[in-house]
Image (cartoon, rainbow, N blue to C red; front, side):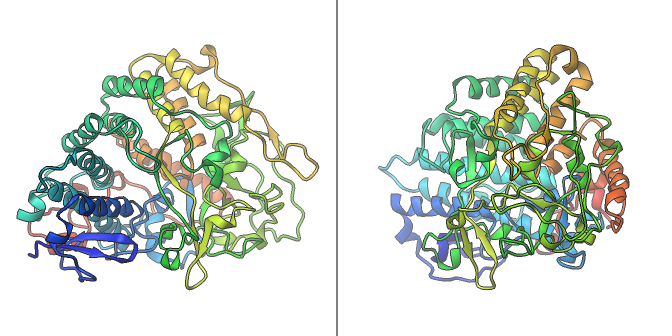
Length: 563
């Protein structure tokens, strides 16, 4: 196995000589070890490790390994794949729970994440060989990033092989003995101890690492430890909620006070073919309509739209899906249509594009004519990831006309931390403190500017209020309210699948019940929907077939043996 480090000059992609997927790679513009053995070389490798956050690692590309996790939402009750059912059939198979170990989406995500691990290991390994230069902060950044990549691998595949900077050279073909939470925590703790509190926009800091450590602890149900570190981030960290909810999803909000850790996408910045834009999200714009974009993927579900209904300003956590808000499924743009007149959480119209409501500054959503495949994937369009009118400078165009977004993707934002802290507190029996944190998130929604109709009035009947001790309650009912608030605040941001999975740790049927109920109810609004049932095995991804084929030591997850 080659021991040299290969630099892909284009967009500064870096991989170990043995290849990002532990197989042989193609060398382009290779630099020798000697040329990199200095502080500048370490910084170059570190920059390339950050570049791996977007999933574009040379050996795979485009939307399959995307860093913003959009297609994972299509495996939940938040989103449909979008477009026609026959476009991207392997993703349609995942959406409808027809999973196989050979599905390329499952493999590409694995490859991209291990590519990130390899790049982080390259930084650490090189820095450790350089004397007389203090590179501890660079090593800490690389260890933070390695922690991120292993966090993603663990929550997707659970049983992963742990390759560090030593075994990457000596023997990277290791068994996947189980979750690697101990190693993830060690990387984040090293970052906490050795990074500055302010490391510049887009770079990990000690506060970034603390927030991520809290998230890792939450996933392990270490409620008390998670609560303590979240309290520190909330009380002493440099973060705050943006005054406007929508500023998390526009150019103005890039690297805002709410952005704790973001993938830094840029378009029209001089890079060849807008290589620094969000290639993974190139499909996810209206397939017709005023933007002239491609390709109609990533469409919100009716179930998600229903979740934004309110009663006396509060969500109906248990009964929201008993009926559907008005939709124009099956209607042409010339047919008459009246939007839902009932009360709604105002976040719906910054999350979901629906007919009769203003769409990101481009005018009133016209319905059928703006949706590429309404009969296959429903009548709704995404909004959070779609650039706003007047922000075309944040978008780039590729060689076949695809859009490369320059909007950053928030891996963790402050509202997420507030709700994770609320969850930890509730699990620790501190329901009053949890309610206060939930109400901070709801207060921002209450005070944010509403989407407007052409006459200047609110575009819909928005009614939202904070919880009181009487209606927030205690026990499981309060915990479910926190979980529901996460969906309202963070939907269409790539979190839903992971939340459902971790809430299934003590109750493996949790996600099974949620998704199968969703499938049944969604057929009311989307009559073309045809899906297999969600089973407990879907709470974890299989180890990709290709990874098993090229490794002597990997074994398949128990739930997927024999598949």
